[in-house]
Length: 222
Image (cartoon, rainbow, N blue to C red):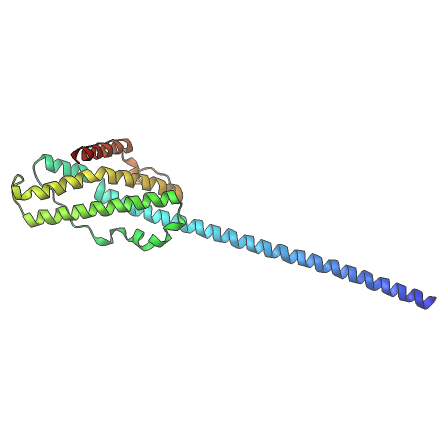
């Protein structure tokens, strides 16, 4: 009887030890699982923050490239060309370097990181900018080819037409530029206001009216 009781006690102790070990393993598994989940969450948070940082950096780079284009090539161009035509002369324009949009060209493959509505207005602006620069270059080359002929000379007709087309393209370009910069400021976390964003000082209502007027005239010419 004593031997049997001893075995029972030993068995009970063994069972208890096993139960304790089992719960210890369960607790360890749960602790390890929580650590893994915490690590995964921390990694996801870090990736999300890195993506947000890249988005802001991309938006900021494109924003200032576009705004600089407004400052140096768009903001005063309409009045300059229009005044020259009113004074019966063909305005001089300089050649614009091909590297003008290096930020956009170098990061075109990353545009998918940005919201779709922002990508749409960016692409719309750069498409219009390419058309404007092509018109401007055609006019510049034609003017240089004709030399200093009198404004009313028949040989200047094509140069005058290209000059007028370049002028009339500017309000729509400026409007697209304004909208793109406003959207990009939202992604970059910047205030859309001058002087840091030059195009923010433009009269968007006037640009809308002028764009509509020119489009209306083009439709009636067709």
